[in-house]
Length: 507
Image (spheres, rainbow, N blue to C red):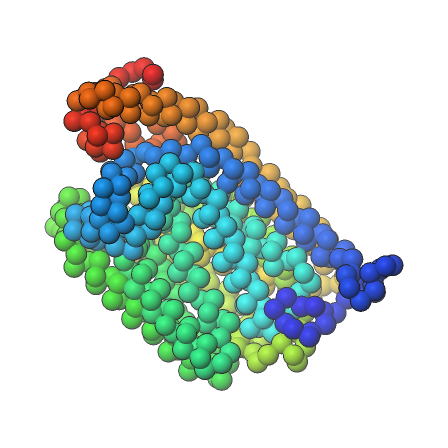
């Protein structure tokens, strides 16, 4: 049965005996076809890697900004965290809500964060692939959709210069890793909608998601507006006339929601204070010098991403999907997407990535300056779109190969893609043990120091020594040889001390 297409029979590959019940299984369970078995076997590689990465999350402990978040949530609850963000920090009330949700469970919230966020990315990616195939009236055997989703998730989370800040650091992840995934999730109800009631629900979801995104991440808002704007400009070329009125209203509703959320953020006291703190109030992002510097920065970021060969695993997964797709039967429901036009579709996807990536760099440059090239976590807002576009380009390539090449060539392309896919997973796995060891060492040091500081507070001490325990470039008190104390005051508040003093020895 085709993915997402009930009562539709998938054409069998030559030699595929999956349509015949095996002995003792007649009418109840069928052996998977060789194609399905191979796809599931390949999908198991990144899934196992993601499971191992999530398991390492048990070694995560609070650091950097989280030292300042935890006391607020402990004393004032989630509402206090939202208020702190709106009034003092940056105006991102949606960000404050997500921070409050994991900071309610101080250490446990940090330990479970990687596993939960990984499941979120995988679920959204898988649902997106399935629904897009259904709406394009395409069918594939079971397995390839999961294969693509697993590759998208593994590459997005692990093919980064700093995996810790992308996956394991909740404070940075909610702003730049989870934010684009949540924005993408707002597409799912629209793709699944068939009745008038479900379309109304999809409009309500995209409006709420737009407002939330506007108050969660400025960069993700930029990416979403670029995609929605491109849909409004070019959508008639890709969407059927029957579906276009709803798609247009949906895109306008989402853009309006983002505009409302962004207005809430930009007019907040916290946002004004943040701009003053970084001198952004007196610097125009549209100044020629800033635009030119942003272009140079984005060019260096693009060079770094394009030379990261592990991204080829997503392209290979897309090729495998494209080699396997077939037209679905009449029972698959009305088509929403027009017959595939590969070149315009590919150009639109690449252009969306380039425009959104450059605009995100323009937005972040006044705050980070030249460091925007090394602040890799801020790339994730548009890298999720990049990974999805790579999968789409691979699918278009695989479809073209299947339609225009002889069968031996398609088998060769499938084998080569499977090798690249597996090699990409191996490449992503190589740095993980080293990072895991660093996290394990830091967790042991953090736990011993935590016990010592709590004991000092219980004795009524006003001050206690603190030794920095950094990992993966995370900020700790008394860095730069003790010259930079932040966030020492927050650490003291967390342990209910008046102050902490610099120490060089972990208890």
